[in-house]
Image (tube, rainbow, N blue to C red; front, side):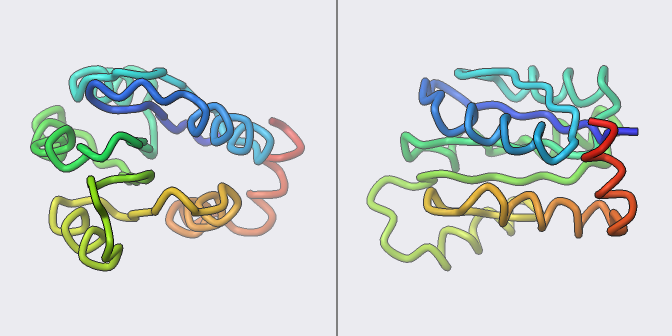
Length: 146
């Protein structure tokens, strides 16, 4: 049975290419992807995760204001009683020069994984499989069934 993930671009960001590529890669890997599109609010992420019984929420942002847009997201997920993996990726900070610092900031905000804009989708998918504790057999079955 495919694992469900929620995908979207948070806040006022309207960059669609990255999530389109990620949606295709996740689908090809056997995940059920609910793509919320661009300019997605925190409430939309939470509502979709709850209504689709998702196991992960993947947040994209390329315009550099992810910190402001993601502030409080984990409080909203907790308030809804959701225990989901959370990933964030893209160009997360304007003038981002030290990704390790940016990564630490988002980890402190509660994100399980933090990726820069140069991350290969396959790397994120491998980490998602690892975090969901998918065995090789389960991962292969998802690809066959998906």
